[in-house]
Image (cartoon, rainbow, N blue to C red; front, side, top):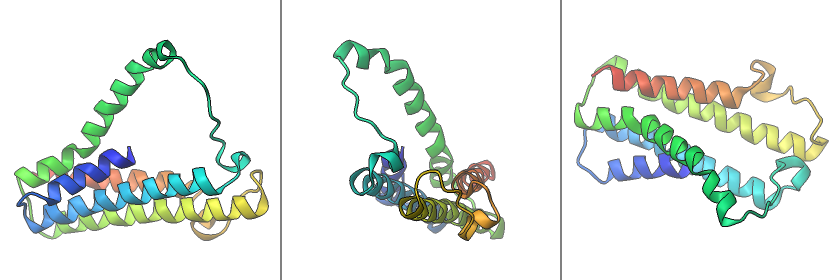
Length: 161
């Protein structure tokens, strides 16, 4: 879904939209680019016991059985980008809207920091190590909390219209 959010933001930036919608689009570009780079790094640079992604062989029929899940995920990604589409076509402005864009960036930044620190510590100390430094000192799951914060702010921005 990182790629979907990156594409949604980048495609919006190609259009003539108000500055606030551009900032909203940049938040999604940041989110998508950061997530894709993080997952690529994790897959290529870390041992399997850390990233826990195992290669599985699957026939065409096995892959076809996953179509409902893939279609459901596609609908989810479409809905995740919906607030951006709303803010681009029915622009809103003012301090509340600007604060919500800032909260989206803040939430996605907290998630990125959480992923980065957890990956670094787990690679150094082992997969069973409990991370308690950085944002983990205050939040048990900063990556999920940050995403929840960022996506909620994005949805509220769409609802302001």
